[in-house]
Length: 457
Ligand code: ARG
Image (cartoon, rainbow, N blue to C red; front, side, top):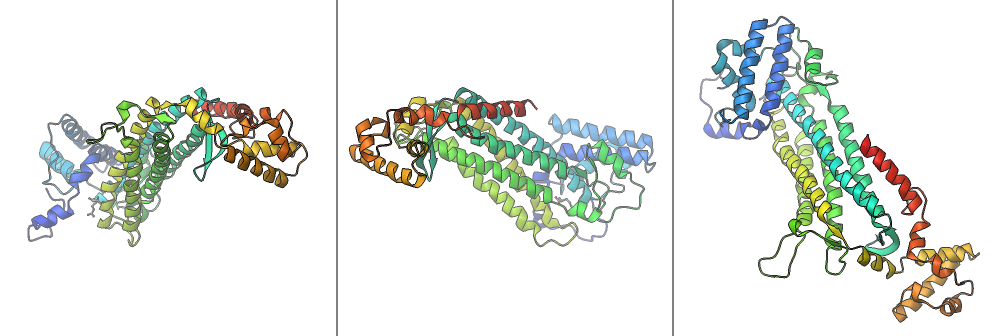
Protein backbone atom coordinates (compact mmCIF):
# COMPACT_ATOMS: atom_id res chain seq x y z
CA UNK A 1 0.00 0.00 0.00
CA UNK A 2 1.18 3.49 -0.84
CA UNK A 3 0.55 6.25 1.65
CA UNK A 4 0.48 8.91 -1.05
CA UNK A 5 -1.07 7.61 -4.31
CA UNK A 6 -3.95 10.15 -4.56
CA UNK A 7 -2.38 12.92 -6.62
CA UNK A 8 -0.51 10.59 -8.99
CA UNK A 9 -1.73 9.42 -12.37
CA UNK A 10 1.05 6.95 -13.12
CA UNK A 11 2.53 3.98 -11.34
CA UNK A 12 5.96 4.49 -9.80
CA UNK A 13 8.80 3.20 -11.92
CA UNK A 14 10.09 -0.02 -10.30
CA UNK A 15 13.68 1.27 -10.13
CA UNK A 16 12.43 4.43 -8.46
CA UNK A 17 10.49 2.39 -5.93
CA UNK A 18 13.56 0.31 -5.14
CA UNK A 19 15.83 3.33 -4.88
CA UNK A 20 13.41 5.24 -2.70
CA UNK A 21 12.39 2.41 -0.40
CA UNK A 22 13.85 2.06 3.08
CA UNK A 23 11.98 -1.04 4.24
CA UNK A 24 15.07 -3.17 3.62
CA UNK A 25 16.68 -1.53 6.62
CA UNK A 26 14.10 0.47 8.60
CA UNK A 27 12.29 -2.81 9.41
CA UNK A 28 14.92 -3.00 12.13
CA UNK A 29 12.77 -0.69 14.26
CA UNK A 30 9.34 -2.30 13.73
CA UNK A 31 8.97 -2.63 17.52
CA UNK A 32 9.65 1.05 18.09
CA UNK A 33 7.33 1.99 15.23
CA UNK A 34 4.46 0.05 16.80
CA UNK A 35 5.32 1.31 20.28
CA UNK A 36 5.16 4.90 18.98
CA UNK A 37 1.84 4.26 17.23
CA UNK A 38 0.31 2.82 20.40
CA UNK A 39 1.34 5.93 22.34
CA UNK A 40 -0.03 8.13 19.55
CA UNK A 41 -3.51 6.52 19.48
CA UNK A 42 -3.65 6.41 23.28
CA UNK A 43 -3.16 10.17 23.22
CA UNK A 44 -5.63 10.67 20.34
CA UNK A 45 -8.31 8.95 22.43
CA UNK A 46 -7.40 10.88 25.60
CA UNK A 47 -7.93 14.06 23.56
CA UNK A 48 -11.22 12.80 22.10
CA UNK A 49 -9.80 12.91 18.59
CA UNK A 50 -10.78 9.26 18.21
CA UNK A 51 -13.10 7.36 20.55
CA UNK A 52 -12.08 4.71 23.06
CA UNK A 53 -13.38 1.74 21.16
CA UNK A 54 -11.47 2.86 18.06
CA UNK A 55 -8.37 3.16 20.19
CA UNK A 56 -8.85 -0.35 21.60
CA UNK A 57 -9.33 -1.83 18.13
CA UNK A 58 -6.27 -0.08 16.74
CA UNK A 59 -4.07 -1.10 19.67
CA UNK A 60 -5.22 -4.72 19.46
CA UNK A 61 -4.47 -4.70 15.74
CA UNK A 62 -1.02 -3.21 16.30
CA UNK A 63 -0.26 -5.73 19.03
CA UNK A 64 -1.25 -8.63 16.80
CA UNK A 65 1.07 -7.31 14.08
CA UNK A 66 3.88 -7.04 16.61
CA UNK A 67 3.33 -10.60 17.83
CA UNK A 68 3.20 -11.99 14.32
CA UNK A 69 6.41 -10.25 13.26
CA UNK A 70 8.05 -11.46 16.48
CA UNK A 71 7.00 -15.08 15.96
CA UNK A 72 7.87 -15.05 12.28
CA UNK A 73 4.35 -15.58 10.91
CA UNK A 74 4.30 -12.09 9.37
CA UNK A 75 7.28 -11.50 7.09
CA UNK A 76 8.29 -7.93 6.30
CA UNK A 77 8.44 -7.86 2.51
CA UNK A 78 9.84 -5.37 0.02
CA UNK A 79 6.49 -4.46 -1.50
CA UNK A 80 6.04 -1.50 0.84
CA UNK A 81 8.12 1.67 0.84
CA UNK A 82 9.01 1.64 4.50
CA UNK A 83 8.15 0.05 7.85
CA UNK A 84 5.58 2.78 8.54
CA UNK A 85 3.53 1.95 5.43
CA UNK A 86 3.96 -1.77 6.07
CA UNK A 87 2.49 -1.55 9.56
CA UNK A 88 -0.33 0.78 8.53
CA UNK A 89 -1.27 -1.40 5.53
CA UNK A 90 -1.40 -4.53 7.66
CA UNK A 91 -3.39 -2.73 10.33
CA UNK A 92 -6.05 -1.68 7.82
CA UNK A 93 -6.08 -5.18 6.36
CA UNK A 94 -6.67 -6.64 9.83
CA UNK A 95 -9.13 -4.18 11.41
CA UNK A 96 -10.64 -2.41 8.41
CA UNK A 97 -11.40 1.29 8.00
CA UNK A 98 -10.81 2.24 11.62
CA UNK A 99 -7.12 1.52 10.96
CA UNK A 100 -7.11 4.51 8.63
CA UNK A 101 -7.41 6.77 11.69
CA UNK A 102 -3.99 5.78 13.07
CA UNK A 103 -2.10 8.44 11.15
CA UNK A 104 -4.37 11.33 12.28
CA UNK A 105 -2.24 14.30 13.29
CA UNK A 106 0.99 12.56 12.39
CA UNK A 107 3.47 12.61 9.53
CA UNK A 108 6.10 10.08 8.65
CA UNK A 109 8.55 12.86 9.35
CA UNK A 110 7.84 12.97 13.07
CA UNK A 111 7.17 9.23 13.05
CA UNK A 112 10.60 8.34 11.67
CA UNK A 113 12.29 10.91 13.90
CA UNK A 114 10.65 9.16 16.85
CA UNK A 115 11.40 5.59 15.72
CA UNK A 116 15.08 6.24 15.14
CA UNK A 117 15.37 8.01 18.47
CA UNK A 118 13.66 5.21 20.36
CA UNK A 119 15.88 2.66 18.64
CA UNK A 120 19.09 4.58 19.29
CA UNK A 121 18.09 5.31 22.87
CA UNK A 122 17.92 1.57 23.60
CA UNK A 123 21.28 1.01 21.94
CA UNK A 124 22.88 3.80 23.97
CA UNK A 125 21.79 1.93 27.10
CA UNK A 126 23.02 -1.38 25.77
CA UNK A 127 26.44 -0.09 24.78
CA UNK A 128 26.70 1.51 28.20
CA UNK A 129 25.99 -1.88 29.82
CA UNK A 130 28.51 -3.70 27.60
CA UNK A 131 31.15 -1.15 28.54
CA UNK A 132 30.41 -1.83 32.17
CA UNK A 133 31.11 -5.55 31.65
CA UNK A 134 34.44 -4.63 30.07
CA UNK A 135 35.25 -2.34 33.01
CA UNK A 136 34.51 -5.14 35.46
CA UNK A 137 36.98 -7.35 33.64
CA UNK A 138 39.61 -4.61 33.68
CA UNK A 139 39.02 -4.01 37.37
CA UNK A 140 39.58 -7.70 38.06
CA UNK A 141 42.93 -7.66 36.24
CA UNK A 142 43.91 -4.45 38.04
CA UNK A 143 43.12 -5.88 41.46
CA UNK A 144 45.22 -8.96 40.84
CA UNK A 145 48.22 -7.15 39.40
CA UNK A 146 49.18 -4.25 41.61
CA UNK A 147 52.62 -5.82 41.96
CA UNK A 148 53.08 -7.15 38.46
CA UNK A 149 55.89 -5.00 37.14
CA UNK A 150 56.26 -4.11 33.51
CA UNK A 151 57.93 -1.39 31.47
CA UNK A 152 55.93 1.74 30.75
CA UNK A 153 56.62 3.18 27.31
CA UNK A 154 56.82 6.55 25.64
CA UNK A 155 57.63 6.67 21.91
CA UNK A 156 57.35 2.88 22.18
CA UNK A 157 60.69 3.01 24.02
CA UNK A 158 60.99 1.68 27.54
CA UNK A 159 60.60 4.66 29.85
CA UNK A 160 59.82 3.94 33.51
CA UNK A 161 58.62 0.85 35.34
CA UNK A 162 54.91 0.60 36.05
CA UNK A 163 52.55 -2.22 36.99
CA UNK A 164 50.05 -4.11 34.91
CA UNK A 165 47.34 -2.71 37.20
CA UNK A 166 48.45 0.79 36.28
CA UNK A 167 48.47 0.07 32.55
CA UNK A 168 45.00 -1.51 32.70
CA UNK A 169 43.89 1.42 34.83
CA UNK A 170 44.58 3.76 31.92
CA UNK A 171 42.04 1.87 29.82
CA UNK A 172 39.65 1.80 32.76
CA UNK A 173 39.61 5.60 32.68
CA UNK A 174 39.08 5.68 28.91
CA UNK A 175 36.12 3.32 28.92
CA UNK A 176 34.70 5.10 31.96
CA UNK A 177 34.68 8.33 29.95
CA UNK A 178 33.04 6.45 27.08
CA UNK A 179 30.24 5.45 29.42
CA UNK A 180 29.80 8.96 30.64
CA UNK A 181 29.54 10.13 27.03
CA UNK A 182 26.69 7.63 26.59
CA UNK A 183 25.00 9.07 29.69
CA UNK A 184 25.33 12.62 28.36
CA UNK A 185 23.93 11.70 24.97
CA UNK A 186 21.01 9.94 26.62
CA UNK A 187 20.13 13.05 28.62
CA UNK A 188 20.37 15.40 25.68
CA UNK A 189 18.52 13.25 23.16
CA UNK A 190 15.72 12.22 25.48
CA UNK A 191 13.02 14.57 24.16
CA UNK A 192 10.10 13.35 22.10
CA UNK A 193 9.59 14.62 18.53
CA UNK A 194 6.17 12.95 18.10
CA UNK A 195 3.42 15.47 17.46
CA UNK A 196 5.60 17.76 15.36
CA UNK A 197 3.78 16.63 12.21
CA UNK A 198 5.44 17.17 8.86
CA UNK A 199 7.21 20.30 10.10
CA UNK A 200 4.70 22.75 11.52
CA UNK A 201 2.80 20.84 14.20
CA UNK A 202 -0.90 20.12 13.62
CA UNK A 203 -4.28 21.73 14.12
CA UNK A 204 -5.51 18.80 16.25
CA UNK A 205 -5.30 19.35 19.99
CA UNK A 206 -2.49 16.80 20.47
CA UNK A 207 -1.18 16.35 24.00
CA UNK A 208 2.54 16.13 23.33
CA UNK A 209 3.34 15.91 27.03
CA UNK A 210 1.25 12.76 27.27
CA UNK A 211 2.96 10.95 24.34
CA UNK A 212 6.36 12.04 25.65
CA UNK A 213 5.64 10.58 29.07
CA UNK A 214 4.05 7.38 27.66
CA UNK A 215 7.30 6.81 25.77
CA UNK A 216 9.44 7.69 28.81
CA UNK A 217 10.96 10.85 27.43
CA UNK A 218 11.91 13.77 29.68
CA UNK A 219 9.46 15.91 27.68
CA UNK A 220 8.47 16.97 24.17
CA UNK A 221 10.90 18.75 21.81
CA UNK A 222 10.18 22.46 21.53
CA UNK A 223 10.41 23.33 17.85
CA UNK A 224 8.54 21.24 15.33
CA UNK A 225 10.89 22.08 12.45
CA UNK A 226 13.95 21.15 14.48
CA UNK A 227 12.19 18.01 15.74
CA UNK A 228 11.79 16.47 12.29
CA UNK A 229 15.22 17.48 11.05
CA UNK A 230 17.44 17.02 14.10
CA UNK A 231 20.01 14.26 13.73
CA UNK A 232 22.53 15.83 16.13
CA UNK A 233 22.09 13.01 18.59
CA UNK A 234 23.17 10.50 15.94
CA UNK A 235 26.26 12.55 15.20
CA UNK A 236 27.10 12.70 18.90
CA UNK A 237 26.39 9.01 19.28
CA UNK A 238 28.55 8.02 16.30
CA UNK A 239 31.28 10.28 17.55
CA UNK A 240 31.18 8.57 20.95
CA UNK A 241 31.13 5.17 19.20
CA UNK A 242 34.16 6.23 17.16
CA UNK A 243 35.96 7.13 20.37
CA UNK A 244 35.12 3.74 21.88
CA UNK A 245 36.53 2.09 18.76
CA UNK A 246 39.63 4.26 18.91
CA UNK A 247 40.18 3.13 22.51
CA UNK A 248 39.63 -0.53 21.63
CA UNK A 249 41.90 -0.14 18.63
CA UNK A 250 44.76 1.28 20.70
CA UNK A 251 44.35 -1.53 23.19
CA UNK A 252 44.34 -4.08 20.35
CA UNK A 253 47.47 -2.56 18.88
CA UNK A 254 49.21 -3.03 22.24
CA UNK A 255 47.97 -6.58 22.49
CA UNK A 256 49.29 -7.34 18.99
CA UNK A 257 52.68 -5.98 20.03
CA UNK A 258 52.67 -7.76 23.38
CA UNK A 259 51.68 -10.98 21.66
CA UNK A 260 54.65 -10.96 19.25
CA UNK A 261 57.46 -13.44 19.63
CA UNK A 262 59.77 -10.52 20.46
CA UNK A 263 57.70 -9.30 23.42
CA UNK A 264 55.78 -12.35 24.67
CA UNK A 265 54.11 -10.23 27.36
CA UNK A 266 50.80 -12.01 26.70
CA UNK A 267 49.42 -15.18 25.21
CA UNK A 268 46.08 -14.77 23.52
CA UNK A 269 44.00 -17.83 24.27
CA UNK A 270 43.69 -20.41 21.48
CA UNK A 271 39.94 -19.88 21.47
CA UNK A 272 40.52 -16.24 20.48
CA UNK A 273 43.28 -16.86 17.91
CA UNK A 274 43.43 -18.19 14.38
CA UNK A 275 45.98 -20.06 12.31
CA UNK A 276 47.59 -19.72 8.90
CA UNK A 277 46.67 -21.87 5.92
CA UNK A 278 50.31 -22.23 4.92
CA UNK A 279 52.51 -21.66 7.97
CA UNK A 280 51.76 -24.38 10.52
CA UNK A 281 53.54 -22.59 13.38
CA UNK A 282 51.39 -19.44 13.18
CA UNK A 283 48.92 -18.33 15.82
CA UNK A 284 47.60 -14.96 14.76
CA UNK A 285 45.89 -12.24 16.82
CA UNK A 286 43.16 -11.86 14.18
CA UNK A 287 40.49 -10.72 16.62
CA UNK A 288 42.64 -7.86 17.91
CA UNK A 289 43.55 -6.93 14.35
CA UNK A 290 39.95 -7.06 13.16
CA UNK A 291 38.72 -4.85 15.99
CA UNK A 292 41.51 -2.41 15.09
CA UNK A 293 40.43 -2.66 11.45
CA UNK A 294 36.73 -2.22 12.07
CA UNK A 295 37.40 1.12 13.72
CA UNK A 296 37.59 2.57 10.21
CA UNK A 297 34.03 1.70 9.33
CA UNK A 298 32.62 3.31 12.47
CA UNK A 299 34.57 6.51 11.69
CA UNK A 300 33.08 6.16 8.19
CA UNK A 301 29.54 6.22 9.59
CA UNK A 302 30.30 9.41 11.50
CA UNK A 303 31.81 11.18 8.49
CA UNK A 304 28.93 9.99 6.32
CA UNK A 305 26.19 11.47 8.49
CA UNK A 306 28.10 14.70 9.04
CA UNK A 307 28.40 15.03 5.28
CA UNK A 308 24.78 14.11 4.63
CA UNK A 309 23.55 16.77 7.05
CA UNK A 310 25.84 19.62 6.13
CA UNK A 311 23.85 21.17 3.27
CA UNK A 312 20.30 20.42 4.32
CA UNK A 313 17.80 23.26 4.53
CA UNK A 314 15.06 22.98 7.15
CA UNK A 315 13.09 20.91 7.68
CA UNK A 316 12.86 17.22 6.68
CA UNK A 317 14.67 16.15 3.50
CA UNK A 318 14.82 12.66 2.09
CA UNK A 319 18.62 12.71 2.40
CA UNK A 320 18.03 11.99 6.07
CA UNK A 321 16.93 8.46 5.25
CA UNK A 322 20.68 7.87 4.84
CA UNK A 323 21.04 8.19 8.63
CA UNK A 324 20.05 4.58 9.16
CA UNK A 325 22.11 1.93 7.40
CA UNK A 326 25.52 3.10 8.51
CA UNK A 327 24.30 3.84 12.03
CA UNK A 328 22.88 0.33 12.32
CA UNK A 329 26.14 -1.07 10.99
CA UNK A 330 28.16 1.03 13.45
CA UNK A 331 25.98 -0.15 16.35
CA UNK A 332 26.43 -3.82 15.44
CA UNK A 333 30.16 -3.27 14.96
CA UNK A 334 30.73 -1.48 18.26
CA UNK A 335 28.67 -3.95 20.28
CA UNK A 336 30.32 -6.94 18.62
CA UNK A 337 33.79 -5.49 19.18
CA UNK A 338 33.20 -4.73 22.88
CA UNK A 339 31.90 -8.25 23.51
CA UNK A 340 34.73 -9.93 21.57
CA UNK A 341 37.34 -7.74 23.18
CA UNK A 342 36.04 -8.48 26.69
CA UNK A 343 36.17 -12.21 25.99
CA UNK A 344 39.66 -12.00 24.54
CA UNK A 345 40.88 -10.00 27.53
CA UNK A 346 39.28 -12.34 30.07
CA UNK A 347 40.94 -15.39 28.53
CA UNK A 348 44.33 -13.79 27.81
CA UNK A 349 47.34 -14.87 29.85
CA UNK A 350 49.80 -12.24 31.05
CA UNK A 351 53.40 -13.46 31.29
CA UNK A 352 54.37 -11.67 34.47
CA UNK A 353 58.00 -12.81 34.61
CA UNK A 354 58.72 -11.76 31.05
CA UNK A 355 57.15 -8.35 31.63
CA UNK A 356 59.13 -7.87 34.81
CA UNK A 357 62.46 -8.86 33.28
CA UNK A 358 61.74 -6.59 30.31
CA UNK A 359 61.24 -3.71 32.76
CA UNK A 360 64.58 -4.54 34.41
CA UNK A 361 66.51 -4.61 31.17
CA UNK A 362 65.83 -1.28 29.63
CA UNK A 363 67.17 1.31 32.09
CA UNK A 364 63.62 2.05 33.20
CA UNK A 365 65.12 2.94 36.60
CA UNK A 366 67.46 5.61 35.18
CA UNK A 367 65.19 8.44 36.37
CA UNK A 368 65.28 6.93 39.86
CA UNK A 369 69.08 6.85 39.82
CA UNK A 370 69.00 10.55 38.95
CA UNK A 371 66.45 11.20 41.71
CA UNK A 372 68.82 9.42 44.14
CA UNK A 373 71.55 11.91 43.29
CA UNK A 374 69.12 14.83 43.63
CA UNK A 375 68.17 13.55 47.09
CA UNK A 376 71.86 13.67 47.92
CA UNK A 377 72.22 17.31 46.92
CA UNK A 378 73.17 17.04 43.22
CA UNK A 379 71.21 19.49 41.00
CA UNK A 380 68.86 17.57 38.68
CA UNK A 381 70.53 18.69 35.44
CA UNK A 382 73.91 17.41 36.67
CA UNK A 383 72.31 14.20 37.93
CA UNK A 384 70.78 13.66 34.50
CA UNK A 385 74.26 13.90 32.92
CA UNK A 386 75.83 11.53 35.43
CA UNK A 387 73.17 8.88 34.93
CA UNK A 388 73.54 9.29 31.17
CA UNK A 389 77.18 8.29 31.60
CA UNK A 390 76.16 5.30 33.77
CA UNK A 391 73.84 4.17 30.99
CA UNK A 392 76.60 4.47 28.37
CA UNK A 393 78.89 2.41 30.60
CA UNK A 394 76.21 -0.29 30.96
CA UNK A 395 75.44 -0.37 27.24
CA UNK A 396 79.13 -0.99 26.51
CA UNK A 397 79.26 -3.81 29.05
CA UNK A 398 75.81 -5.09 28.14
CA UNK A 399 74.60 -4.98 31.76
CA UNK A 400 71.84 -3.14 33.61
CA UNK A 401 72.27 -0.41 36.24
CA UNK A 402 71.49 -2.92 38.99
CA UNK A 403 74.47 -5.07 37.85
CA UNK A 404 77.06 -2.30 38.28
CA UNK A 405 79.57 -2.60 41.12
CA UNK A 406 79.62 0.14 43.73
CA UNK A 407 83.17 1.14 42.68
CA UNK A 408 81.93 1.54 39.13
CA UNK A 409 79.13 3.82 40.36
CA UNK A 410 81.60 5.76 42.47
CA UNK A 411 84.05 6.13 39.59
CA UNK A 412 81.40 8.13 37.77
CA UNK A 413 80.10 9.98 40.85
CA UNK A 414 81.40 9.67 44.43
CA UNK A 415 77.92 10.54 45.75
CA UNK A 416 76.72 6.94 45.20
CA UNK A 417 76.63 4.68 48.28
CA UNK A 418 75.50 1.12 48.98
CA UNK A 419 71.85 2.25 49.27
CA UNK A 420 71.75 3.04 45.51
CA UNK A 421 70.80 -0.60 44.87
CA UNK A 422 67.70 -0.32 46.96
CA UNK A 423 66.83 3.05 45.50
CA UNK A 424 66.81 1.71 41.96
CA UNK A 425 65.25 -1.68 42.65
CA UNK A 426 62.16 -2.31 40.56
CA UNK A 427 59.93 -2.59 43.60
CA UNK A 428 61.10 0.72 45.02
CA UNK A 429 60.94 2.53 41.70
CA UNK A 430 57.27 1.69 41.46
CA UNK A 431 56.38 1.77 45.16
CA UNK A 432 57.71 5.27 45.64
CA UNK A 433 55.51 6.73 42.93
CA UNK A 434 52.49 7.64 44.98
CA UNK A 435 51.23 10.87 43.50
CA UNK A 436 47.52 10.59 42.71
CA UNK A 437 47.15 8.42 39.61
CA UNK A 438 50.67 6.95 39.84
CA UNK A 439 51.48 3.21 39.95
CA UNK A 440 52.72 3.04 43.60
CA UNK A 441 50.74 0.72 45.87
CA UNK A 442 49.33 3.48 48.07
CA UNK A 443 48.16 5.51 45.07
CA UNK A 444 46.86 2.44 43.28
CA UNK A 445 44.94 1.17 46.31
CA UNK A 446 43.13 4.49 46.48
CA UNK A 447 42.25 4.35 42.78
CA UNK A 448 41.07 0.75 43.06
CA UNK A 449 38.69 1.82 45.81
CA UNK A 450 37.26 4.48 43.54
CA UNK A 451 36.96 2.04 40.66
CA UNK A 452 35.07 -0.37 42.87
CA UNK A 453 32.72 2.32 44.14
CA UNK A 454 32.13 3.43 40.53
CA UNK A 455 31.25 -0.12 39.46
CA UNK A 456 28.83 -0.45 42.39
CA UNK A 457 27.01 2.79 41.52
N1 ARG B 1 11.87 6.46 5.05
C1 ARG B 1 11.86 7.84 5.42
C2 ARG B 1 13.13 8.15 6.21
O1 ARG B 1 13.76 7.24 6.66
C3 ARG B 1 10.66 8.10 6.27
C4 ARG B 1 10.18 9.51 6.20
C5 ARG B 1 9.57 9.78 4.90
N2 ARG B 1 9.03 11.09 4.84
C6 ARG B 1 8.79 11.67 3.65
N3 ARG B 1 8.32 12.86 3.72
N4 ARG B 1 8.99 11.06 2.53
O2 ARG B 1 13.51 9.27 6.38
